[in-house]
Amino acid sequence: MTNGYEDISRAVTAWWRPLQPSEYGKGDRAALARLRRAASLVEAMTEPATLDLFRALGLTSNDRDQLPLVAAIATTLAHVHEHRPNKHPMRVVGPTGQIDDSVKLKPIRFRHLLAARSAEELRIAMRRLVKLADGRFDIGILAFGMLHWTDTTRARWAFEYYSYGQDAPRPLAS
Image 1 (cartoon, rainbow, N blue to C red):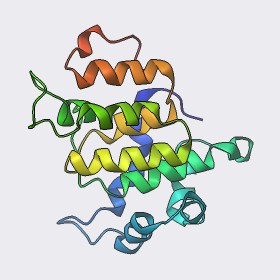
Image 2 (image 1 turned 45 degrees about the horizontal axis):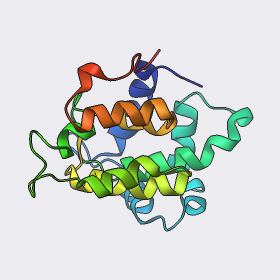
Image 3 (image 1 turned 120 degrees about the vertical axis):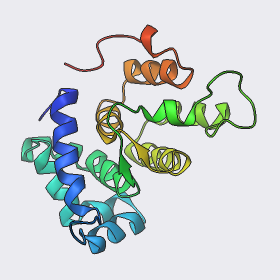
């Protein structure tokens, strides 16, 4: 399995880009639609695009317990419209100063996101995040965060949410 942020970002971007409609082609609208509409992780795990992502991440049959998490990532990324390198999702939805009504991701929803533990809880919370961020941020950061949803990652995202990323726990990736 690719572990470092750079490896995961490259793998996810290489998987995501050909699916997207662009001026260069139609993309794979059917696969995107199936991933967007997947009612469960089991349904998403049967999609060829999910298995393509599993392989792109360097996962093998020895990592089969990671398939639900990869399905959560695939269904979440299917809702992303634009990859903006180095734009942390928390910076897009978090407060830029005082927390007021203009904050896209309210603190209560942010706490629910950080409390997610299972692949299904993470999928639901991250899909809400994508919607609030208008689907425009660094997909590598999202995928890395989901694959490594640990206390350290949650702490890092909390620092990013409140725009204190420079003080966040290091390292972000290996």
